[in-house]
Amino acid sequence: MKVIDSLMPRPGLRVLITAGANGIGLTMAQAFLEVGARVHACDIDTQALAALPEGISHTVADVSREADVDRLFQDAAAMGGLDVVINNAGIAGPTAGIEEIDEDAWTRTIDINLNGQYRVAHRAVPLLRESQGVLINMSSVAGRLGLAYRTPYAASKWAIVGLTKSLASELGTAGVRVNAILPGIVRGPRIERVIADRAAKCGLSYAEMEKEYLSGVSMKRMVEPTDIAAMALFLSAPAGANISGQALSVCANVESL
Image (cartoon, rainbow, N blue to C red; front, side, top):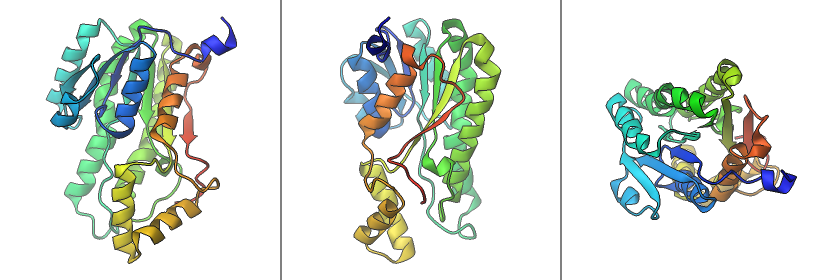
């Protein structure tokens, strides 16, 4: 195989993406569809699921609910197995000091961001063993840096890196590769809400807070959802065959948050 050919996933991959109807998840779903994959997505947004491009099957599912995840895998079974599973579902969680965060807000963030990834991996790994497939867990640069006023989010994203490295060690002999992608400041509505909430907390304007966010990025720019999708494609391609157990930042070099 030529090196250039190894950069693209093989056609016909069976791909499952959680939270695949909006934002980064949707961009990844579209990217895999474009290279000839069969894609199944879940989301809690029924309208967004109904608007998915033709060729992407879907399930309404909340990864914080065990019964929903069971139903997701029942629906995805129509593909006859799985080659790539992307654990993308997550929420921003509260923006507040630790003394202001109530237990319900903390628990919900951990339950979706971390426990949801466990629930998906728990069901996906037997299928990935059969295909010698790929598990991609979405973390964040907040999984390698501290993030004031976002402690539940950061704690969950650090934990995902630990989950990833542990599963890579556990599953390596089965030929299953496990990696984490750590997006930086990704352009889109989600980061706009995060910046607005942080600005309100710190008594700054949106423009001031956006400038502060980018001040910690050496390239002084946001990344695009397509940058994250490109990394997911690469990790699922032959060129990524010996990449496992890695926490890969796609962030324009975020040095502080």
